[in-house]
Image 1 (cartoon, rainbow over the protein chains, first blue to last red):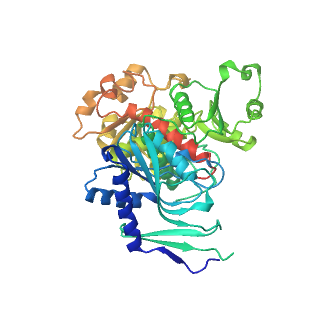
Image 2: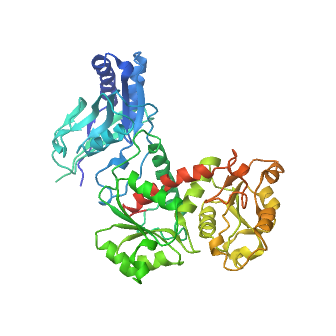
Image 3: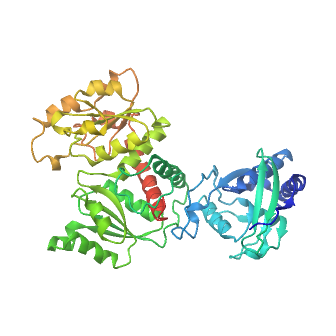
Length: 180
Length: 308
């Protein structure tokens, strides 16, 4: 049973966060020529594209890629059926400063797998993590975001964070709480 | 997308078009991975695979072995020539002995048609057919169809002729099933002695004239003349076969279109295909080999999830 959905971020707030993310990247990556924003398939890609567009508007021509972590998951053959989405990294990640972008950080396992996937394209100088929503009390691995949009403290694993994109452009984030 | 409970890959017969498309989508991603500097994933790191080859093989065996290693699996290689099979051990005993060493999957090539089906019914392991006698060779058919799709964009409505020894060819049978499932039209071409009597029941066209078949098709898959299976004489001489059914540049130049040339290997150069054709731009023979690793990685990866 699910309670009435609660809005976590409306599109105005979400767009402000996307702009903040772009500005933070410029601030922290002074030599952003060597920086790449990589969206995590499937749901981090739209967010990464929005951030990349914002960066381009601000004159920061950073590299952009998309990575799928399916082949690097730690639960193959343990139930579930995982079909990969395309990875699209048309540059070597060797010595690059990589920012992994995902919508919701939950257990941290996808991010762990994504780091391995990125390593197959070269050895980056550093890897940072940028997430729109951090469910900080649900982590199963020692992974922490470097850039966070909003943090939620829900301890119920059945609670669900829904990220809705309209026309691949405007985003809203909802929290669907389990009644138990 | 169809999510069944596919535990084995025994043949193309029984698969659905949707399952094949899932294999192709996954193989596309593996093909990308194989272009990356690090070509490995640890996806099957806790899986052990035994490659049981009761018949000679170079290409298929190396391709499976590489696919398994790229996926991080542990592997055991076994060939009948250097094993206790020579001492009279039965197939089930051999396999059960190997399985008792905690092996999860078996890739098997065997001279007896149906050997993989027999094994699947009698042992507790996932079985992948790497060729069973004159029955099926599913991964070859998948990589052939995948290679056509990559070259021509799709298989829907494409015309494919399979030329040569259809009677003894597991590649031909598996190809017929997979190509038809994916919407292609299939013709077989060869001397009447090498075309099975009831081939019409499979819904394929039959031709005994290579030039006519080439004029009809978009893709020509030239099969190897299997000298090891020619226990009777099916044609008067190799020379005559080459004259009537060998693909050479003269024949290709007569066409008013470019066709895609395939061969499952190993090639008898100068018999079913001339060197000039095999090495031409129209030939995708080496792409077939490259795609073979990606397609086999996809099959192993999807089967390891016990759902396809």
